[in-house]
Length: 140
Length: 493
Image 1 (tube, rainbow over the protein chains, first blue to last red):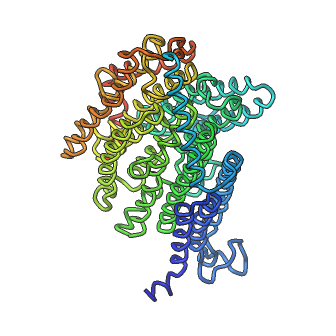
Image 2 (cartoon, each protein chain N blue to C red; image 1 turned 90 degrees about the vertical axis):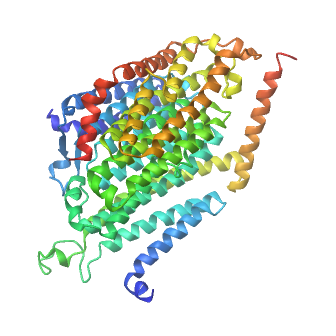
Image 3 (cartoon, rainbow over the protein chains, first blue to last red; image 1 turned 180 degrees about the vertical axis):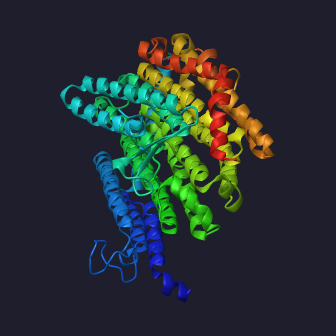
C-alpha cells in the first residue's frame, strides 16, 4: 500500500478525483453541485493524460539544438494536444449544462433536485387528472 | 472530386448544412427547413454513393491534411460504416421531412434551432461512423451528444430536467471511453484503429489493455443504453419531441452499438474479447437482462412514448446479445436488427407524434377508437407493432429468427429462450395498444373529431411501414448479399 502510494501516487490522486466527481454528480442533491462534480470528474481524466505524457528529465516538446533529436528527452506532446481538444469539448458540455440549469431555475425557482422532481411529479398528476376530466366531460 | 474524399464529405456536408440552416433560419424560419432538407438529402445521396462504392467489401481511406496514418487522422468508409451512414441519413431525412408541427409540437416556435441541431446530430453520428481514429471518435461522440442534449431539452419542462440527467450520465460515458483510449495510447503509443489493432497482440494479456477494453465497453454501453446503463434513456426519449425521440431511438443509440462492434472486433479482435477478457459474454448476459427488464417495464407504462422508450431498452438488449455472441449469424442478426429497429421505432414515434398533434392524447387508454378515425396512420402503427413483436413477413421477425438461430448455433440457450419470451412480452404491450385502437369505442369528443394527421405524416409513416414489409420479404437478398459477408469479415477467420 505504501509502495503503491510512493510509486503511483499520481494515479491514486486521479482515482480520488474521479470518485469525488462521481459522488458530486450522483449523491449531491443540488443540481449546480452536480455540474461541479462533472467538472471534477472530467478534470481527473485530463490530469491522467497529462501525467502519462511526462518524461523524467524531459523538456518542452520544441526542437532544441542543445537537447538534440532524441525523442526520449522531450515530453510527449500528443496527450497535451488531445486534452486541449477534450477541454474545449468539456467547456461546451458545461455550457449546455449551465444553460439547462438556467431554464430549470427560471421555471422552478430552485436548483434543489428533490423540489424539482416533486414539482414535475405534481405537474404530471395534474395533467393526468385534466385528462380524466375531459374523459368524463362528454358523459356529464 | 477524387473519390477518396467521400468519407470526409459525409460529416462535413451535414456540419455545413447545420450552420447554413441555423443562419438562414434567422432570416426566414421556413427556409431553415428547406436548407436542412437539401442538406440531409445530399448526405443520403453521398451515403448511397458510398455503399455502392464499398458494398463489395472494399474500403475508402482519407488522410486528413495529407498526413498518412498513424500520424494523421484517418477517415475510413468500409461496408459497415457505409451501412450505418445510410441508416443514419435515411432516418434523418424522415425526421426532417416530418412536419415540424407534429414532430416538435410540444414546444412551438423552436423549429429553427431544431433543424440546425438535427443536422449537427447527424454530423456527429456520421463522424463516428467514418472515424478511423480512437480519439477522433471521442470528439464526434461528444458532438452528437451535445446536439442530443439540446434536442431533448426542446420538449418542455420535464424534458429539460431529463436532458440534464442525460447530460451527466452521458458525460460519464464519454469520460470512461476517453480514459480507455488513454490506456490504449499509453500502452501502444498509437490512436489509429488499424495501427492499434496491429500493435495490441504483442502486448498479450497486459492488465492496462484489459482495463482499456472494460472502460471503453462501459463508456459505449452508456452511450448505447445497454442494461443496466440505460437509466437515462426512458426519461430522455419519453419527454423529447416525437421527431427527436424517433431520431434518438432509431439511430443515435445504434451508433453506440456500432462503435462497440468497431472497437471490440476491429481493434481488440474477436479472440481477445471472447477468450482473454470475457467482455462478449458479459454483453450477452446484460443484453438478455435488458430484454426482460425493458419489456416488463414497457408493459407497465401508460404514456405511449414512455412505453416505446422502454421497448427501445429491450431492443438494444437484443442487439447487445447479437454482438456478444460473436458468431457470424448472430452478428448478422444484430446488424439486421439495427436497420429494422431503426425503421420500426421511428415509425412508431412518428405515429405517436401525429396522434398528439391531432388530438393532444398520449395516454394509451385514451387511444380507444382511433383506428376508425385515422385508418392509414394506425395501419402503419400496426405493421410496425407487429414487426416489433416479430410476426412474419415483417422485417422484425427475420432479425429475431436469425438471432435465435445464431444463439442456438452457439449453444447459448438462455438468450434464445429470452428472445422468444420477449416476443410474448412485446406482444403483451403492443396488443394492449392495438386493442384500444381497434376494439374499443371512445367516449371522448376529441377522438370523435380526429382526422388523419395530414398527408406528409401519413406518407412518412406509410413509407416506413412499407419498408418493413419489403425488408422482411427481401431479407434473404439483403442478409446473404451484404450483411452476412460483412459479419464474417468483422469476425475474421
